[in-house]
Image (cartoon, rainbow, N blue to C red; front, side, top):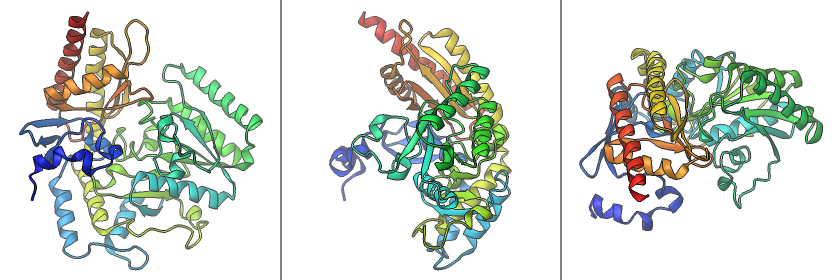
Length: 432
């Protein structure tokens, strides 16, 4: 058997570049809590949470125990052919955590699948053909989800979906509130006047906080106005809470953070702490319009994943992680704004809960600086902390630590980030 180290050398031969070449491609041997343990023997503070998946921390003992216990009795469904306790218990628990009348579930495996389900449900329920999404949002890479994803054009290159969709701009990150609301109304008026009539639109889909597109937090009133526009025209509103769900914004879901109730919600990522699981969620009344056989799954709602989901929800409650997300999110933003005052390369700091974006720009031109972000991420990794990037030009560092993170770990990680920024500046000065 080849050694781990030898296999790492063969990455480019074994894995597709689209899978193996993401940043930073760090070989790890295990993870625990807020840390990865590298093949190089080092411990790395993880401020990515597996891209907002490990909200209760890596390998939480309660989640691991639930998976092991479940594996002793049932490894696979499929749901519908058989029925089992864990999927029903998870649905019952989630009913109490979701906003409004979202109380009926179609479980699947990934965020993209949950989005596909949400769009299909909306079209079945309304008998309308078209979907409106927001420029900058990311909803997944499967063909249906890709048709409404516009965070980067490269995701759609050579893959233009056959599904006809329309886009309106997401809220400008630097707009004042009144300006943002006026522009939103004008954008929809223009869309309905020139491109598609509202009675042809099945649904409007958006991320309540822009994720991969740059970590933009909209005004509460802006999201409320989107809700009003949809209700005015009988259009279903879909919230993509794949990244914002399960405490990331300080409430269980961003819908509760902003006080806006969608008609359909897509949830995934942190739902089962890394075990593949997602769900399309709507009211029972809406779900009944989705006829038998029009949608299905082999692995969705897997028993082990449902056990992990139940345990994850228990941890969020027992360890008061929603409050931790709020408090330490505010603390981290305060500390980052201090860095912004110190380093002109930091253009903006924004976030809600422990979903924080740090935007970098050329201090002279003001242009987004994705190259600086890449270098700073590498230098931060050298210090011992792992961040990830986002934004159309890769100009934003996203800070999404597990919700179990402590104040001391926030301080530790941001101290290492500051050192990385200083090292980047020093290196550039030496080149001049």
